[in-house]
Length: 202
Ligand SMILES: C[S@@+](CC[C@H](N)C(=O)[O-])C[C@H]1O[C@@H](n2cnc3c(N)ncnc32)[C@H](O)[C@@H]1O
Image (cartoon, rainbow, N blue to C red; front, top):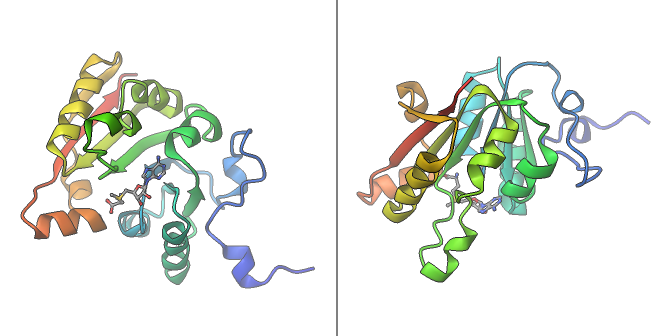
């Protein structure tokens, strides 16, 4: 039976297995460079960025159903063919579902800061993260980070300073100018964005 237009265009990946890596060609019409946003929230950054870069494919990862549904709604409204969402935990996605060395960028914007000391073990950017990033990035691939949280920002910098194979780079202005929902909220309260980026050596 022919699929309805809505079913055919659903942008949230229906995971057949959570044990095997995604076959990217099943989810994108064109084989072109891939970038991934972890914890994409309501996907306002990703939708805008994907709209401006049709020559790049994008995956947004988010664990909350309501938020990944917003990615779907917004992307479909704009007819985006180069963006998909996956509802799953970010570190698990990197470790088990994203194929090795397939992405040119990881965007991580305003990840939950877990401010209490006893909860810091839940932070996504921890000592294990550079290795997870290394597994999925292509040579010269880049991790772009933003946060409002001064302590987490310090931790991000310490983690990457201790990791082998990454060098700090400037975030391109055109990228920094595409803001996220949380970023706009924090900035409107006078809380500045802390941003840093690390490129994997060839
Ligand atoms: C503070 S919000 C930031 C959302 C968006 N990046 C922005 O800047 O507007 C953090 C988002 O990450 C999601 N999230 C937190 N931890 C996650 C994890 N381990 N895996 C997937 N999503 C996660 C949350 O559900 C939430 O939508």
